[in-house]
Amino acid sequence: SHSHTRPIPYSEYSILQRRTDYMVAMRSSTTTKRRKGRAPPKNILGVASGPVVLGLAILVAVALFVAFVLAGAAHNSSTVGEGDGDGEALVGSGAAVRGGAGAASKQLKHEAKTRLVHGGSDSHAPHLFPRLPHMPPFAPITNSEKLAQDTLDGSNPTIAGIAAVLSNFLEVLHEENRKNSERKADIPELQESYFRLAKQYLRPFDAAYRNKPIFPVREDDSIFISLAAFREHLLGQTLRSAFTEAKHPELLYIGAVVQNCFGLDGVQCKTGMQVIGKNQAGHDMTKISDAPPDANGIAEFCADPEFKQYCDAGQVRVIYQHDTDALGPAVARYYASKLWGGETFFMQMDAHLEFANHWDQKYIDEAKAAKNFPKAVLSAYPPGFSEFGNYKGGTPGARLCVCEFSHSDVENHIIRINAGGNTPVDAPRPTQIAFIAAGFFFARAEFLTDVPFDPFLPWCFMGEEIALSMRAWTQGWNIYAPRQNLIAHQYRPGRLGLPKFWESVGRDSGRPNLNVRMQSHIVRRVKFMVGYPEDTEALILEEGDGNALTDYEHYGLGTVRSREAYLELTNIDPVAKRCNRMQWCSKGELE
Image 1 (cartoon, rainbow, N blue to C red):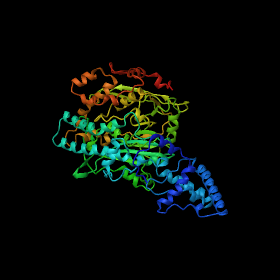
Image 2 (cartoon, rainbow, N blue to C red):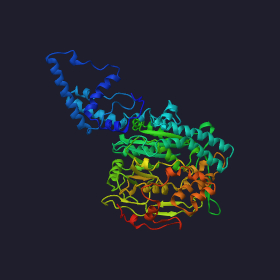
Image 3 (cartoon, one colour):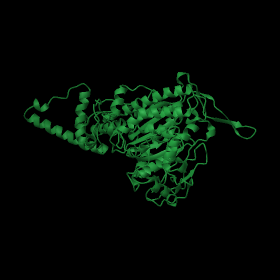
Image 4 (tube, rainbow, N blue to C red):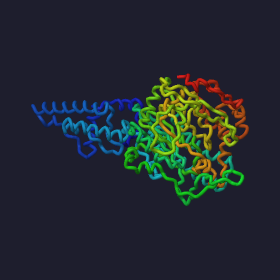
């Protein structure tokens, strides 16, 4: 049964993971019989006597020894779960032995495969149950009120409880956004509305687990993929590519935030801004058209017979949100990060990627090769691709060594990062770079404890990368360029008319440029972090933008290294608004 009443303490959890195949196989055999409604066999030695007792004892001992040896050979002594995630018992090693050595080997291989498909070595972990429903969108979570409370008070945190906390927040946010749109609330009101709800629902959740992981970190090289998808038509194909090309798909776990137009309650979905030609002055002519409800990439992936098993096993965790409630990538990635369930590695990525063969194992090996591992972050801007099915990977990885202060008023003169040069594939080990790309980075899961995602950056598109880079580096994490590319990204020109979150922000109230105005106030949080002289704490408060500093002490710079040290390393001058050349970065001089 998975109806545990308390979380497993760290020490007890690690003991569970270290149990040998031999001991668990014995337990699995009796558990199988018990779950099928049959009582365990009576003590045979209690009813037999004389030589029969000795003979039976020898046979049982030999059978268990053979099972133990074969189990180790079949799966390198990995921990055998008590059952798959759906409560169906696995066939124990004892049953395999009864069919002889050949049958035993075949049975054990089948058992290992079944065990891995249904949640890996962590299938027994109580915090993964009850499973979070991945379909249909907005499906209710059974017993959500208690699950949410147990998660908030720290007594029994679960993935379902976390999703219940987030869902409660999103439901109230949706209703408040609807009312604000109807009355065309002004910018201060809209800001106050979001920050009030975030303080009420999200602040207590983050406070309960500050400076500690919500769950124990597994040591099985499992990977959690944080994925924010805004009206993304390639989400299903991206997931297929990730699982198809992975060496160990049974160890991949998805935490997806799907922000779609679902066409509910009479809502008419729209396209993005489409370029339809040029006017007489040579300028682009644009329009927005009616559109059908968005395709749900989760439904596509989970309905595919080849991949359905991973959804059934709980390896796809999803939060759904209406597109008009989307508040930008920083907040969406905050939601997605909370669906982490104890996996060894954390990977953040965009929802329109293609993967090279065995990308998972290669990224793990690359991270471990970094000199500062385990506090090493791999990051890059991946190369582009147009059509799925042709990507092989292996090209030299780009180095994020260039930045500039944007000259655009729309972008509020925030720092933009870019690539500058490639890392030689034959380099002996990964070398350091200056920045983290929000669209792809890979690190040990402890990153989430050291650099928790910030829920107080709504409406911001630019600025999340420099903030992420500075926070990670000042907390003692070094940033590295992978020596070769293992993923490719579909870069889309704006003229394609694909939807953007900033177009949805003001759509309900007929204010298409609302997000630009909202962002200008909140992005001061990032500018304060960097050290812009016009964005000191005193000036921000004096000018009425105090929301931008909400709980900054918990989502600001780290305490291991200073802001001044980072600015000196990266040659960034926030006073002169200038990014200078970083030779150490472009030439890969730091390990």
